[in-house]
Length: 199
Image 1 (tube, helix red, strand yellow):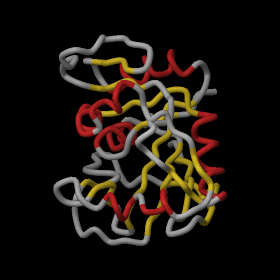
Image 2 (tube, rainbow, N blue to C red; image 1 turned 30 degrees about the horizontal axis):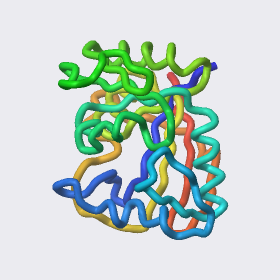
Image 3 (cartoon, one colour; image 1 turned 135 degrees about the vertical axis):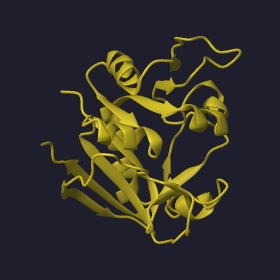
């Protein structure tokens, strides 16, 4: 059964980006802290992690069939050059299809409807695997709507003091999580997975 998940590298004070899109050198330092090369689709991105972190990353790639991402993330990554670095198709939730892009491409599709519409489209592309949502507004909306099944944190020992929270304003909290159902220690990162308790 397809699960709806979210995950991100997050600071101890709950941010997935610092003020003005800063702090990534801290949030992703663990990408450079090991001797296991994790292959991506981009020759310009080198990821070298511990075996423990590589195990988590391999599992995500093996079990995730499609991502749902927001237009902001798509824009700041320049659409990952047309294909996500993990080689997983993406559905971009947006008000309009950006110039020069097909609405429904092999690796990038654009949904101008609701979050529920974007998730349903992603399910059709996931071929029975999980659908992963990016943190921030999309994850917050999915949690509020009761759509989210699991939350994965790559918890990094840094306090950013502000920025983009993993979960922003929520209208229906508090939400109770079960777990951690998985806890793995990497180098300057702790991988934690929680199950959302449904009412």
